[in-house]
Amino acid sequence: MSDETPVIEVRDLTMKYGERIVMQNINFTVARGEVFVLMGGSGSGKSTLLKHLIGLKEPAQGSILFEGEGFDINDDAARNRVLRRMGVLYQNCALWSGLTLAENVALPLEEFTKLDTLTIAETVSFKLALVGLRGFEKFYPSAISGGMRKRAALARAIALDPEVLFFDEPSSGLDPISASRLDDLIMELKASFGTTIVIVTHDLDSIFRIADRALFLDIDQKTMTALGPPAELRDHPPNAQVHQFLTRSSVGAS
Amino acid sequence: MPGTEASATEPAHAELRTEGDSVVVVLSGKWSLEQAQPRFETLMGRGAIAEEGVRTLSFDATELAAWDSSLLILLMRCQDYCDEHELECNWSGLPERALRLLALANAVPERVQADTPARASFVARIGTAVLGGWHDVLAAITFAGEVALSVAGLFTRRTHMRWRQFWVVVQTNSSGALPIVTLIALLVGVIIAFLGVVVLQRFGAGYYVSYLVGFGMLREMAALMTGIIIAGRTGAAFAAELGTMKVTEEIDAYTTLGVSPIDHLVLPRLLGLFLMMPLLTLYADVVGIAGGMLVSRALLDLSFTQFMNGLLAAVTLSDALLGLLKGTIFGLIVGVAGCMKGLQGGSDASAVGRAATAAVVLGITLIVAANALVDWLAALLGV
Image (cartoon, rainbow over all chains, first blue to last red):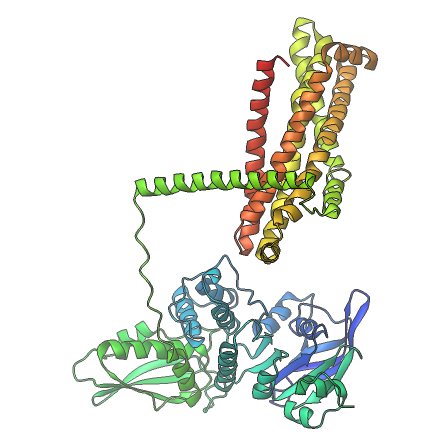
């Protein structure tokens, strides 16, 4: 696979909730090693789009290709091959409350690799150390703070050294310092592992800090209305909504 | 991760090479979490690292092709080993990105675990359990008192109840509960009649099956079985609903507004059950007697008229009223147990499950105990 092949390619995607169309005519690609942001107002379908990208929802129309390969719902082996290469950080962390942090991070390793228990334990400790949670192996998710939970969930997301990491509002519920530390951590992981990163967020600070390109979903027009580097979109907004969104103003430019 | 050499297909390999007072770890091949990798213990066991005179540990990664976390795990172990044996670690031969990750992993020092308190002695644990049990009893009494105050507030118009919630409870415990109550009551009536046929027919007293079914259903079984069904159905639902509201901080939202969650959440549920339980019990009476009648007709050739004549000669209105009173009490027990366990629940995902279980267990236990108590009082009073 050459480096020019996009990691993710979305073609003419239409998303529906029941019969209601949420978004249509979505077309974009995510290149290898890119930090790609999905932005838009509340309820514009960002998280729904993310669910489509990670295979939790099937497109009503159009297709989503992961390195040229589609999610084949009927082929478990092919599906797992794709899932194996992704890591997801959910909005509410989604750490399994009945398992310790170590068990949470170990589960993907146990499921997808043939490593022995000792190596898994070492890998888990290393991943927890990467996110700054060394020594927290035996803690349950309920016993640690929200920021730590986010980082523990990140440790689980990177357990298998994924090629693509998906983040659903990583800074939600975090104080500015923790949020910016998490951004730093994301960038460090990207630089070290060369991971491609797709983030759903409406946190402007982190959009301008870390995003290479951003996609804007417009809730009124039910489609994407802007795609490009965030600074460029801010300086030359293609429409009023994007301008409002990126400049945090309540009045439109036009 | 792109490698520097063409050895991308070679499996991961590590070996030691001694150069003067330095030991070099030679890394080669493709390091991946997918495949087995050289373990630190085997690497050190093979070499002569513990020999005297070794000062530094360095790395040669020129043959290293691709790598991921698996390499870093080995490097972490090497670092720990150097720290333990006071060796100098020379990282210069390693890929720069690996070093950055290593630095990141070392950025936050290991959390020193607080000493877990020693396990308490046997006596102390019994004491704690007893105190905990006493605390639960106090909490239950407090809760019952709050509910009583809230009910009293209804008459003084101090309590603002949500009538919509009341009607929802009425609905789920009427049309929603009828199928299961019908099935269970019919089967219980049938079972009592079978019992009567087997026992009474030996004495040629098969006719008195109607007595047994009448007393059995009206005084005991209709109320008891309905109570247990509602405890499993509605009591568990109450606990799960309120438990989830506790998890999502909805209860806190009521409290911080100065609004009593008892008025808004508990009272409508309790009153709904208070209204519906006697009606359900009455319905179960009728269905159970019908079941008994069918069995008598089939096995004893007793006509429906004969059966009803016998039954009406035996039972009195007070028997039926005793059953309805029991049903009402059981309804209140189920409502209080369900709401109390829901509101007392914790705030994680498993708390909801625990609250529902506790509500059903407590509800059924109290129903059986209350049944015995009411029977005892009825016997004393000659009802």
